[in-house]
Length: 618
Image (cartoon, rainbow, N blue to C red; front, side, top):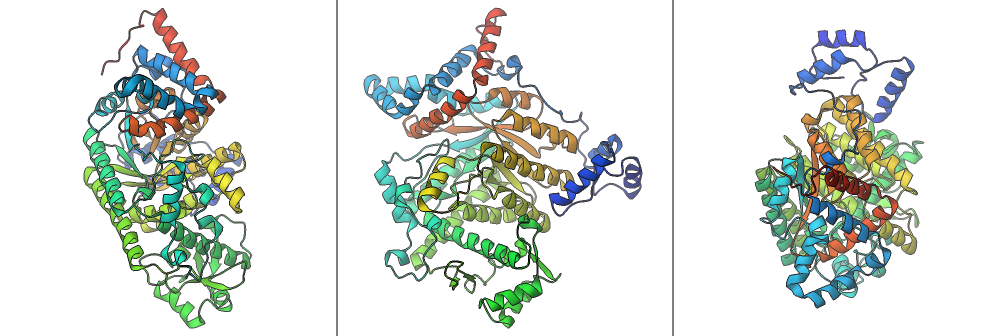
C-alpha cells in the first residue's frame, strides 16, 4: 500500500517487489482506475511487505487483515443481545408490517386503540410492540439501558430525537407556503422569478407525503427554531454522556426558514450549471465535474461576451482571489467565487438559458429576513461547537433536492471550520440522485486541497416517491436514478471513491448507512483489498434500531465500528415516525423474508437447545 510516511529505501524495496500495486496519490479516481487496469493486465497481486510496513508506519496496532467477507447467517451471534421475548416481538411486528390492510390504516388503528384502551394501557401496548421495537425510550435517561446493552455487544449509537409536530395536511401546507415565500415575492416586487423547482408548490407543501423514515420540520417562528436547537443540544449532551464515540443527528430545516435554503440552493445550482455551460463551450461536456478544467483565457473571453462584466473587472476577479494562476480553473475554483467569505456575490450575474438575458443570482432580502438567515447560521455554529466540546460527531441529515444544495454547502462550511483535527461534522449524500458522484468527488477534492477531514454518510435516500411526483407534476427533470440497480451502482461508485481516498491519505471518513447485505459485503471486500483496518475507525456501518440486527451485531463483535440510529421521544409524539416505519417495513418485508426467517431459526435453535428463556448478560 502507498504511504507518504514510508522511507525512500522501504518504498524502493516495496516497489521492486510489487511495482504496480501502488498508484500514486490521484487527483481523481480516473487515474486510479487506469492504474488498476494496468496492474490487472500485468498480473500484479497485493504485496504483504508494503501492507505491513504501511500499517506499522501509521502507528496502528497490528491486527489481522480486515475480513474479505462475513457471513450474516449465524443467528446465535446475530441475536445474542436479544432475549427470547424480544425475538418473538420482532417476528410479530415484522409480520404486521407486511400486511397491507393494517399498514394502510395504521393511523386510524392507532387512534382507535388509544380511545378503547385509554392513554396508560395504549402506551404500555406500544412499548411492548412497535414503540419498543423501533424507539429506544422517552427521554435521555430512559434510553441509556439500550445504549449500554448495544455497546456491550459492539454497537454504538446515533441519537435522533424523533418527535414531530402533529399537523393536519392543510396546516402543514399553510406553514410551508408562508415560510418559503420571500417578502419581495409577497409584495410582487421581485424582478427575478425563481425556477419552478425552487418555488414553493402548494400541492407539495406537506413535505411528509411519500416520505419514509425521515422526520419533518415545519417553520413556525424564530422561537420554535431556538427550541429545536435546544433539543439538539440535549441530544448531543446525551450522546456525549452515554458513550465515548457517539453520533448525533440534526436537520437544518429545523433551524431556520426554508425560504433561505430554497434561494441559496437555486443560486448554487445556477452557478454550477453556468460552469457546465462554459465547459461545453470549451468542448469539455460529459466529463465528471472534478475532471473539468477550463482555460482561463477562454473563460474570461466568454464571460465578457455574455456581458457579465468588463474584461478588466473579470480579470480582477481572478487575480484578486488568486484563481486561475495555473492557466486553468476547475469547479472548486469556480465555486469559491461565491464563497461567503468573498464580496463578489452581489456582483454575480448568470445568463438565463431560456430568455438569453443576464440575471442577478440573488434577489434582495429585507432586514428581518437577513437577520433570520444569520440566526440560522448562528444556531448551526452553536451545535457544532457543542459537538466539538463533547467529542460527539454531528450527522447532518439530507433532505429534499430543492433544499439539499444549500444544506450541503452550509455543512461543508462547518466541516472547513470544525474538521481540522477530528471528523466532527458529517454530511449525508443520497446515492439515488443522478448527481451524487459529482457531489462526493467535488467535496473530497476540496477537503484534500484545504487539508480538513472529510466526513460522509452514504444513504440511498428517503424521498424518492415525493421527488419523482413533484418533478413530474411541476415540470423539471427527475433528479432520481432511473432504476434501483442504477442507485446501487451509484452507491458503490461513491463508496469506492471515498475508500480509495482513505487508502491514500487516511483523512477521509465514511459511514456506510445501509441495510443491504451486498453493499456491506462489498465494503468489507474493498477494505480488505485496500488494507483499511477496522480499528482505524475510518469506515463505519449504520442501521436503524430494531432492524437488520443480523448485520449490525456480527460486524460489531468482529471489531468493526457499527452504529444503530436510535430514535427517542414520548410515545404520543413519535407516532408519526412509527407510522412511516410501518410503511417502510411493508416494502422491505414483502420483498424479503430473510430477517423473519433468521429470527424464527434462532427461536427454534433456543427451543431445541434448552435456551428458550435466554436473557443476555452484559
